[in-house]
Length: 207
Image: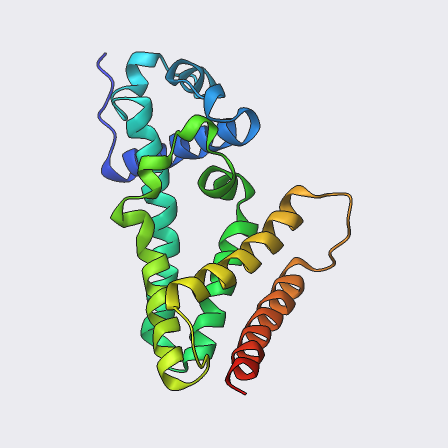
């Protein structure tokens, strides 16, 4: 008896399962540990069946990146559309990045901690990957104009703030020997300290 075709909802759900399984493999064994054959085995599929969903490993990696970055981009767009105050918007975006990292460690490792042999270099440079960062830079640029930061380049300030939050969540995720307390409180303190320090530093430079 021929197998019934999957519905659109079933196809979407199974595609998500494939991506989730691939992300877990990469988090455990790195990009080198991911192969279409190994992924098919974990999913109890034949390699041929897996290729019906993704034509190559690179196609799979692209889908992983676009799905994850798309999720982060949506959160940044919502903040940009609903939060008028520039400082509050910047804080909300930085917190959204932290929550994005903390709610799914494997996904965060895939996007920002694992890049064996430059496997995702091309993906990191495409327009989809840059979209959330562009929104953050735009709001920081407006904050410079409004006086939150007196001087500076919006991209440079975005790099500093992103580095602070990225460092905080990376420590929480990867360094188990230290007790950082509640992760979200730790992130909140990091963001507040970074913004206060940058603003104070800008004021000192003007004196």
